[in-house]
View 1: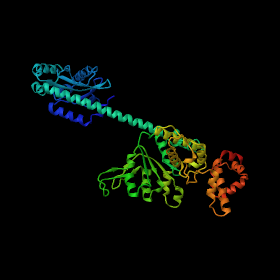
View 2 (view 1 turned 45 degrees about the vertical axis):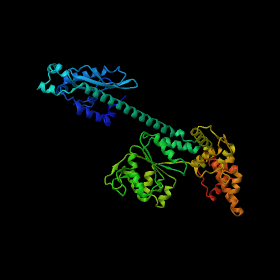
View 3 (view 1 turned 90 degrees about the horizontal axis):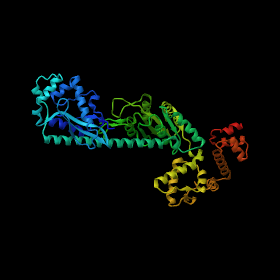
View 4 (view 1 turned 45 degrees about the horizontal axis):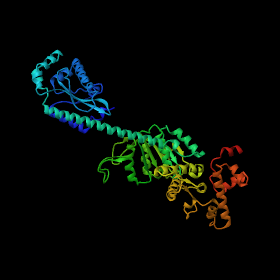
Length: 528
C-alpha cells in the first residue's frame, strides 16, 4: 500500500506542485482508493485558487459536497489500467476535476487530482451557472464577478502540459514507493538473516561448559543490564555479544562495535563520543559518536581492559548517567544504550594493581559471562570442524570435505591456544591445501610444527630438552595430570584410578605442580 507521507517531501513532487501553482494557480492533492482526501486526515484544507471553492470549503455543507465530488471522480478511475490523467465529470460547482490514478501491479491506490478550474471556452458558457450554484449553497459571495475572475482557466495546450505533469508526478511516486519497498524488504531480510545467524542454537557446542553458558545466556538475554564477557582470545566473545543483541528486545536497533585497544585516547574519544566542528585541527564538521549511533541499541566494547584511566572515567559517566559530552562540546547528550563489554584480561587483578578503576569494574560486571576455552570443551571439536567444513563447502559451491580420524585424534590432543579462531584458520588452510580431495589426511598438517604430532611423539618433543631427568619426569607428570583432568572433566576420583594413585596423592601432585584444579564434577562430589 502506498503511503502518501513517503512522497510528500520528495523533491521532484514538491517542484512539480510549485510549478503548477505558479503557472496556473492550481493545487494538486492526493486521494486514497476510497476517494478520501489525504490532507483532510491531517486536518489540513488547501482550497484551489478560486473564491467559489474557498467559500464552499469554508462551510460544512459545501465541504461535504466538495469531498463527495472528489470521491465520485476518484472512484471512476478505479477500473483504469494505465496511469493516464483523465478529465472527469464536473464537481458540484460545475468546475472541472482532473485526476491521474496511482497503480502498482494492477492495484489501485488512489489518485493525484486537481479541481476548481475551467477550460478556455467554458467560461462564457458557465458564467451564469457558477454564481447560481454558489447562491443555492448559501455561499457568501460578495462579488460574483470578481470571484468568477479568480477561477483559473487552462487552454487545450495547457491542459496537455498539465496532464503530462500529473502523470510524471504519479510515475515518480510509484517509482519512489517501489524503491523504498525494495529497500525495506532487503533490510527486513538482512535483519532476519542476522537474527537467524546469531540464534543461540547456532552457537556450536554441546559440552557441559557450553550448556552452562547457554543457561546463562537464556537468563540475561531479555535484560537491559550491562554485561561483561570474559575469556581468552579467539573464544567467540563478539559472537556471544551479537547473540544477546539479536535475540533480545533491542534486535531491531543498531549493534555497534568498537575495539578499545585499536586507537589512542584522542581518536578513541572522538569515535565514542563524537566531536563538534572546530574541536581540533581537521574537525571540519560535527561528527556523531558511536554512542549516538548506537542509541536505542547495543554497544559492544571489545578489549575494554585496554582503556586508559582517562577513558575509563568518561566511560563510567555514560554507564552511571547515560550522558556524554562530544569532544569540543559544552552540552551533554543523553543516550539509551545497552553496554556489552569484553576482555581477555583479569580485571579483578588489574583493580588490585590499580590499573583499572574499581567503580568501573563493578559497573561493567553487573552480569558476567565467561566463555570457556576450546581446550576445556574438546567434545565440541568434531562439531566445530563439521561446521567450518560445511561453511567452506557452501561458500565455494564444492562438495563438503571431511577430516580423517588421524587428524581428529591429533586435534583432540592439541591445547589450541588460539581457541576457535585458530581451529577455524587451520580448517581453512587444510581445505585449500586439500584441493579436490574429499578426505583431508594428516600429511597436510605442518611438518615443521610439533603441535599436531601424535601424543607420544609430541610428549617426547616437549620433554627432551628439559635438561636433567628429574625435570623431564616432573614436566611429564604435570602434563599427564593436566590432560587427565580435561579428559575426565575434572573428576579427580576417576583420574586417580586411571593413574593408579590415591586421590590424596593426586590432590597433592595437583597442588605441587600449580595446576588449576577446576570445578568438582557431580561424580567426584558423590565419591566424597
